Amino acid sequence: MNYLKLISIFWQIDEQRSFSANETRLYFYLLKIANSFFWQTEWFEYGDEKMKAYVGVSSAVLRTARNNLKEVHLIDFIVGGAGQRVKTRYQILTPNLNPNLNPLYNNKIKTKTNNKRDERFSKREYVASASDFDE
View 1 (cartoon, rainbow, N blue to C red):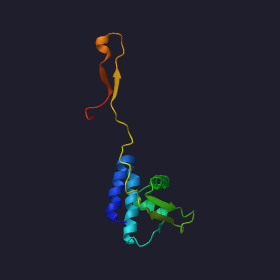
View 2: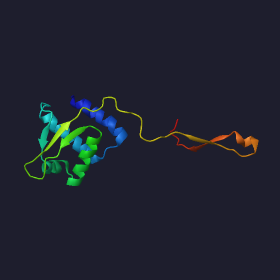
View 3: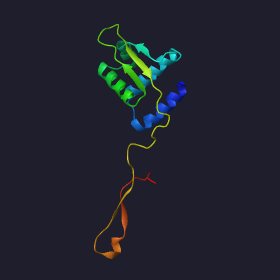
View 4: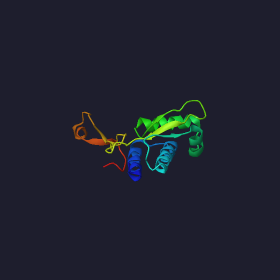
């Protein structure tokens, strides 16, 4: 997979998911490692202690970031185990090339009709929630 294409797709997915700084840093560090291997291997191994040191996170944050990246199918990983010499195996996945570009939030204008008996106001609508940036 092309390194620049992966980055481009990551930013498109990030617009929907709003990745944390730790998730972004971990993903780019994994891309750097895969790039240093010239993308020759599908899986590569890397120790958790070394990963925590380079990314600058705790064990809990590393686990959370890995799981969140796995959830959106950007990476796959197999945890190495409790021993110092047992390393976690990582795989950079090819993300969906056609991500859903619809935002997660719904920013539709809601209108309400005044239903009072006075007929001159009954057909008027007013905006219940909107901003100056809504179209």
